[in-house]
Length: 408
Image (cartoon, rainbow, N blue to C red; front, side):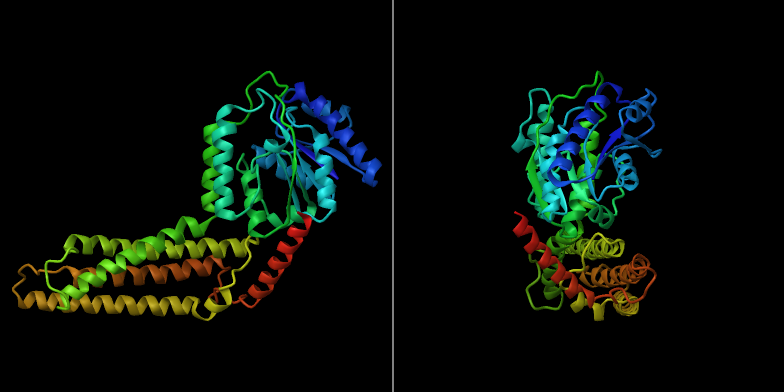
């Protein structure tokens, strides 16, 4: 196993952290016969942290790319262990708490999270806005969006298997790395475990690297970037039906099915047309995000993939979009002819013009969206040609859920 600590000028606390980590390694060796190492992922320290770490028996991995996440990714990549532990090098975490984490991994979990709220937070160890606002809010949003069902999504002490690390394909360079790990693990339906850990005031004589508002926003934006259902599909599902309803009433009035002068006049019709095009664009954005996640390996194809597969191809989207564009042009041409016959006087209803314009706009979006999806799917016109694997992926997910229940 490898205990990995990101480090940037931590000479005051590094010795204590390495000593506690080595104690945890001795416990695991005595109990389970595991060999281990302490890895310091140095992010460009200038205070001699590297020499101190080597002197105390740790192995130093130099990570030139700046950032908390970049340091941990570099440290994990350079570690030798089959089990990986991450924890800060500021003295705030007790690495002895990693012992039950490793035991959870040995019991079948893929990732073991620490929970500071269950283990205990010492006075002065966490600012009140982080403890009572930032952490609960961000953890709550993460649990709602990704159904992770964890207590402390931003605990800095956690463990994962080498296989889980490789499957996650983590890319975050900053503090959002902590959220990225949980989100992608949830998307892949990896098996979670959670154990209590303690948090103590850090041993440094300077402000922490964490910037609550900046890093909180980085976490929040990452949550929504990796949640296309909530970011794109849900807004489209809300706006689209409302827009279609308004257009239906407007169209019924235009063709004489209802009496003129109803509630939904020209202004409502124009707004509904804009809403419908935005809803269609939002659906395309959601599909693009979903396909990118599947293509990148951190998202499992959904159960509906095999149903959509025959209808989602570049050719289908081009043909569908082209037909909509031609229909829209025909409608606008007919309106122009009718308008000309009236001597270009004002027409009472804007519905035909809005309908024609929407068809052209949505048709063009559909065609361009088809090319975008093809690029995201590896420049392949068959956007879901791997759809038959979706059922297998669902079965794997079901087995993983069963494993998670057994671990719990």
